[in-house]
Amino acid sequence: MGEPGHRLADLQLAIMHVLWDRGEATVSEVREALAVDRPLAYTTVGTMLTKMEAKGHVTHRVEGRVNVYKPCHERETVSRSMISDLASRLSRGDVTELVCHLLDECDVTREELTQLKKLIKQKEQELNNGK
View 1: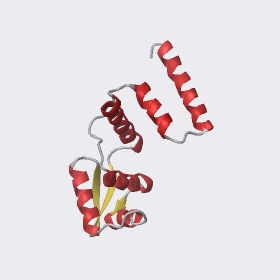
View 2: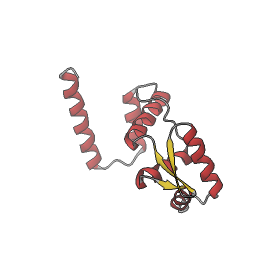
View 3: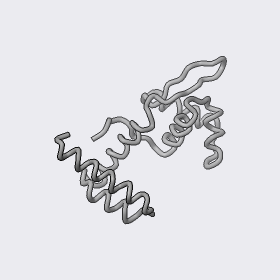
View 4: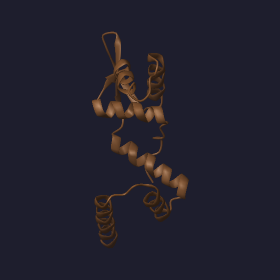
């Protein structure tokens, strides 16, 4: 269903969002960006980035005496992988069940429903054209 290996815990995902938004960042910059929602020690962020690098989620370059981290994967790739994994684990691949749950549990606007209808029509056309 998607690329395997993009399971990220909450803190890891928050760090990735900082890196995706900025392109690259130091430990201090990541810590500062996260401080609004969660104050963390410098060592906590540094340790997490080291673990994420070992798992292939980020890479770094050395600039002077600091490491500058950047993501190894695009936001879209990780999002697709994590959503596919979640759908597979929660609803065993049953797309209808997953969508029904999301529609019931989320505040969906008229604009979002309109967009969803367009996406469904596009998918129907793809299937009818043999894609």
